[in-house]
Image (cartoon, rainbow, N blue to C red; front, side, top):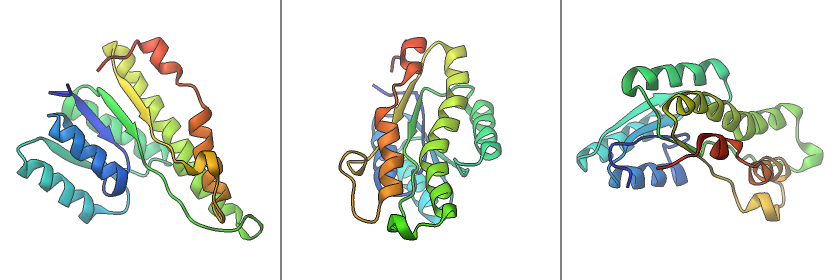
Length: 176
């Protein structure tokens, strides 16, 4: 199903992102492991995927930083000339009661969880429109629907991604 497809998974060095990257590789995709802080974990994942006989590379980029996202997609275009699937998984969760939450923490969470999804989707969609195909998958959290004590900012950021329609699917007529 994914054989030969180029799949970028953001925040892929651990957790759900790691599992998603492994699943894509097991389905014979060319996997791009995006990471920001966990270089050792990203390298371990790339090695594991390669040991299983599949193709993987890693790219360091902070998804909340437009310059880094732009560079990541330039590298993908240079290395693969396409992107077939973007999995927006990168996210951060830092517990803090609302009354004690500093504006800097709010900005950090929103910039990674929301702006990062926007930036990656924007750059991927440019390539996908030219290809006339592609798939963008935005991962969220149950916390976005139920909330959790000490996670009001995280909850709000994940609720946004649940509520936003994906206009790219209609305009791109995406297929995998």
